[in-house]
Figure 1: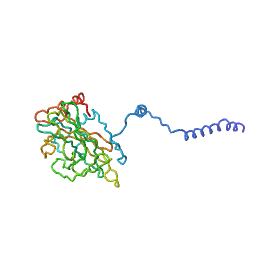
Figure 2 (figure 1 turned 90 degrees about the vertical axis):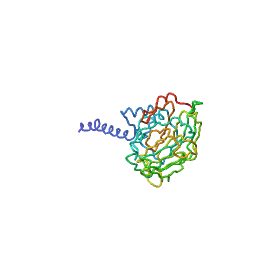
Figure 3 (figure 1 turned 90 degrees about the horizontal axis):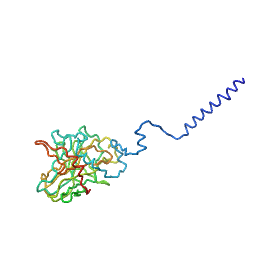
Figure 4 (figure 1 turned 135 degrees about the vertical axis):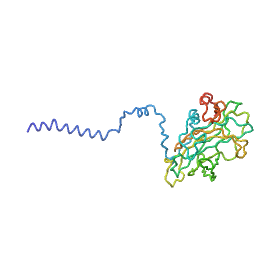
Length: 308
């Protein structure tokens, strides 16, 4: 009897107290997790930009348009391959898979320029039906021989455009453009590409003083109709920018010569930069019978003019 009492007093009761204490502190201590993942540890210590651009942010949340272009992003838009394949585009097109460099300087007698952009669905199709493409801050620069600097010659303003079949044979100019708080937005049309450009007269320059052109801008996906489900996360759309030399500010088509076109990149709910750059120094003359698809990236990087 005495032994039983001693057992309860010195063994069982302390054990019960210890167990109760463990449960108390477990339920009332701060929620601290421990990880062996060095990536998670580094994200705390270094705090880098960990934005996942493969996951679009909700388009209902306003996002400030910020120019985050770097020389690496710009040159990257003129090298390598497009991020995806383009719906309905013939494989025979010279720019079917990658950017293209055509005319770094304007032909004789050409003294105007305009930027443009093109939006394609992925070759597997675009399932999103309530999505628009918002474009902003599109600008065109020319490189001047007289100063060695880029000169801003055209800013976005209003845009115009048409829809075309993937092979550019069929045209529909009932272009759906909407003004936004920043820039404008374009409603894609099923089974058609959307080609946009600056509305109004083109910008002009002194033909003898131009050594190159640079077009750059930003774009993202937004909701078309707020009362319908947001399907921007399902969108499979790609965009690029480029530019044309024209004989004059008002010359009719086809009095133009393509400067070049940049890399087609997927659009997301986050702003992305899109660029096309070509200078006389960076232009790689194509082999006879072939097109020049890339530029001399080192020539661009090592001699990037000031003035932006």
